[in-house]
Amino acid sequence: MIALPNPNSKMTLTQEQYDHILEQYVELVVDAMTYEELYLYTYEGTEDCIRTHYPEPVQLLNEIESTFDKELVKTLLKSVGK
Image (tube, rainbow, N blue to C red; front, side, top):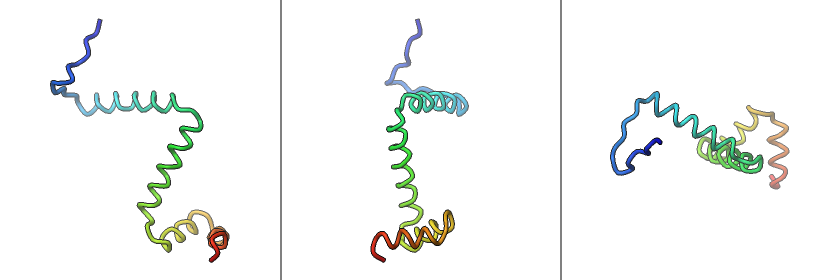
């Protein structure tokens, strides 16, 4: 039988050990997600990242143009009445 560590005492792991446990845990979490959960998680993370990196309208529009093209920018602006 393996005893779990006492949560009240400080445990030390090397960075390599910590990274290994973290990677295994992340894999388990992602594997347990449904397609819908994974999509929502990705969508929300992407939205947060874009809002953080491109807080001004001109920054966002420039990013859309550089990632896609000017026509998409025009289409998106038209969809909001601009």
